[in-house]
Length: 343
Image 1 (tube, rainbow, N blue to C red):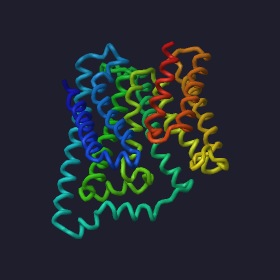
Image 2: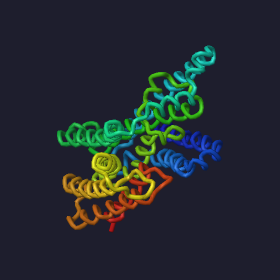
Image 3: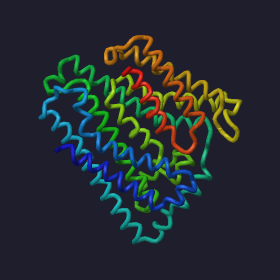
Image 4: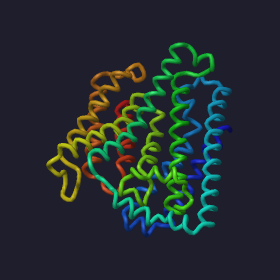
């Protein structure tokens, strides 16, 4: 039952997020945000339900004692994180309400006005935003490599662990911790902005204009990876790198070299569109070949997985409108590759 605190935290986030969406459903619908935010709420619910099964799925020989330790550490880490956030929000709420000047300074409409005045949609700014997303993927590869090295050295077996259980424990703890941190801040930003500390407000200097009145894209991006913790690592890694890397390639090439709009009234370009599709295929192919010991499939199946992922990536890029590609890219490309793998 050591998994229960983490599951309850994410189910609690589902309830809080859903309550916020329903409360503001008219505004959300008018701004075409309702469907996207409902999906984000559901992703929290899915994460809470699936968490108890993550560490053992690929490690059926994991002892109950080792599993309990992993659950306990993760849950304690999250409870401490939540506790620190609650105290921080309460402190800032008291300070702001006692000082009218601070309350006036921490007005969200004022923040939005300043943000829009200073907003830059150039290549340099976009590179900074994409780098933050790519860092998520770096963490995944780093922890997987660390787990592989420790497993090969025989160190993990002394703790009753293996590559999958240890690596996914680190990935989930860091990834879920990141989500917990940002969702607390987002709910405060969108409802009681004055409760946010100054150091948290600085996080939002680099978000997109389209995120001013909704949740930042990083949260659903990480949550969308959760179902793919149950597939072979090469598919999980491909999903993460497509969502961050291929998307970054499409965006940056489009901004740097794009001259032909993909659609009328769209900032997306044909050049970026093609670059993103090409990057998707290369990512699937290289990762599937490099990490073949964890997913031993034929080269023909690898090519087919790459083609399916590329088609779905391009389809999302060309036709989706009101749902974030940070949700659709991992879910559709991931399940597409998973289906081909199972055939």
